[in-house]
Length: 354
Length: 88
Image (cartoon, rainbow over all chains, first blue to last red; front, top):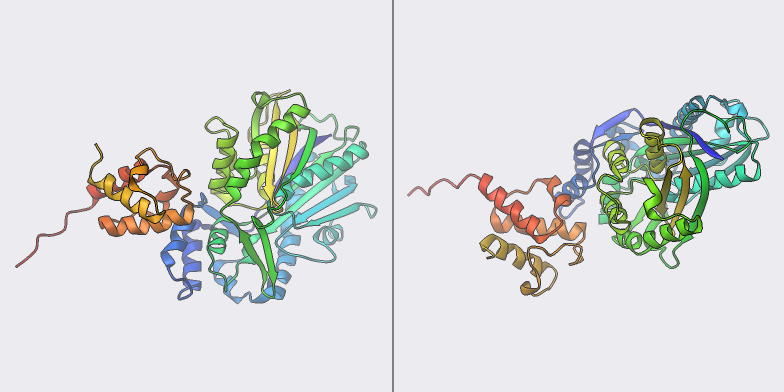
């Protein structure tokens, strides 16, 4: 089974980080005890630009969960369709070739889900199997690939599609000036990514394009860490839970997770030629670099993605994967680890061979 | 020898974390002192006030050690124009 292609899509309203900070500072004028904290937190998020689904001036008119979630559904369908179209075109197939769709998001809800709405817009088979996933957060990009891999392992002649749409700007909360929300509004952004995962006997099995094989996947749950990250869901929507402990959880767990995973595959860290990691933020990326003793620039594509589009939650690791596939594919036979961590707290690892 | 700027920075850092200044050197990392992003920002305000300087908003993420802060403050002090002479 292989990752055949990735397609990304970003909303049209692209802003320098400082412009977003300025708009939020104006919006929250009088609500913050120390407004300079917002500027400094945002300026040190490692983010230079972000794309948003609405122009900045439109956000104050979005009030309450119902209005923002309705906006989320419309934008998620549009952006999701763009990402899926690009992924399918890159793989040289159409929606009619897809047997299973995994849809992941944590920034809005819908029923019928976004994948169902796309089936009405694109020529997916009516028998396509749908698995909407809500709540995995940032880990869902890696977990989605793992679940799609599970599917095509069971049905090796079939092709699965993962779609992640995250519109984090629609979770901004006007009544929350906590440090967690100030960081969240500086770090997270909007975007979508779709991944074509092909079974070993599918029509994409012998493609000449760079398409790494998925050798193994591993999920690891860290007990009693649910305070580290997530949502508090209230009348106004999703309110961020984000603990300063995130880098510590990474430091405490990632090395042993990766070593155990590689050992299970008769490999070690020195066998890995590239690390396709979720662009969680400067502290998370630094913790990943430190605990795995990675060489300088090992995570350069993740840092670059963070700078250019911000943290897209689940879609981030898929955007980094696209960068590798298009601009820096591994040499044949080399190994990569794709990894993300997210609410629970937990990690998902995917071992790839180019 | 630790100079005035270093001494003052160490005092501010020690005070912010309730530590003895003697336990902090220029090589001490913020991670080892459990200084997180918010601590660093609050500390930056105190350093600005103590030295009458303005720290660029995006400078904090590159500061990993006490020595990084001291060197940054010294650089900003050199760039800051001297106040005009008092007029009687």
